[in-house]
Length: 371
Image: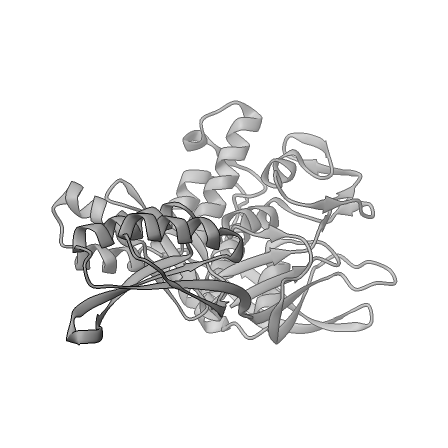
């Protein structure tokens, strides 16, 4: 599922979580994830509120412990217990940025304003909601930066806060009205989710949600809009080269496939066949973009010695996909996400199996569990 965000009023962790809940995420799933962290003395609710002319959802946190200071390492460890990589990555990003800004190692960062219950709840809750909705890609429209100043433990700082700006490196931003429009928590969640920026992608819209912030803005709703949609397929025209071969060895066929793929073929494969005079044979197929067809045709004819081949034009339907990486036994394993599932890259598993001596099937299950 694709999540496309319109940060109309800005973006904070509680606003994003409220929008996801309004779009259909389960509040019980959020509560279960927060409970796994070991955090105590909290209660969360989602309520409908009016902000400007719109009705939206506001996420509300009530805590018995109102302390706002904790070591970043403590929050990261608690998020890890929930088994949500996005939450762990968001808190790690905050710790790394704060460490760079204040000249201390990330492991020694002590969070002040961001060290409270609500930071952990917002981040873990958002990660749980994304998982509950099956979100695999996140897009965001340009973020309003806001302006002015904010009072912190370190004194008066400009808005956006330095930590927010550091977390937004690579994001597309725009000017905005005075006030803190994007919080460090919101920026960290976008970074951890691998958000892309720009116009909403092509998708089939399935649900929308409106998440309200706590700040009242005269004359306009203070909301972030979440749009959930299913990806649409991309259709391109491709050329298929085919050659019937009854006098080419398996070694040569494998070599031709490797060379064709290295030269830019979209795919290459062999099927068994019975030719004239009932000779057993193989049909070599090469799928290629039209602009590479001539070069790949020469390659096939030169390598196989065939006196001819066939060209056919086909429509290739490609569903969108993207990759993320999980860390397993000290090595990176790429995970390929499609609209209907996810699987680890085979070559990465082969390398890991050789390094660890573990069975390939076991490593595949571990990689999926690590998501």
